[in-house]
Image (cartoon, rainbow, N blue to C red; front, top):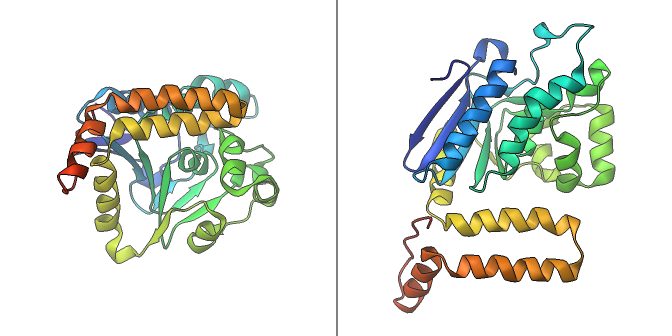
Length: 257
């Protein structure tokens, strides 16, 4: 079904692996389209309750494949037709998304990681705002997410200086959820994703939605949105199960419904 990515579902977790290891999983037009398709597939699959995005080989994603860049290229049109659909699909994905950053995440590859809800980072991984080195601005939503994670001043510093950010530094800045040793990488990523897959999925989706909306409305408007969202959450089967489990003094068994 896919040529530039690998997609599979295991134990309610969808694994989307960028699969051009010989090119450090650099983006091509085909890869952008396949990622977008896979995101929609996972969003519509009731059996999927968590998504992990990672890279094959030694890189997460090195950004755009510069082998396809020409002097005549309209970079704005590339963003509108290739990257915007992919990033919009990820933005509206109402299930938890984990970036398992196994190696370098540079350029638009860093943007992809920033757009995920959690970033588990291998101790050998790094982030690079590579755009400045080729005279471009960070794209694929990069400057939307970056200041929300690290603040305005630090975002400007990272974007302009374009220096490599180590896994440890990423943790200090708030870019990484956790740094994982190489020897326990796969086990800990699977454990983290499995934990999310067993949580109340609808509630997580609502949390994601209202966190985003809180940036763009007054406090009074937010309180009304909050009430509306809580009403939706209160009607889910997972809420009822949580209440039953509380009174029965047992761990809840959430079904994502």
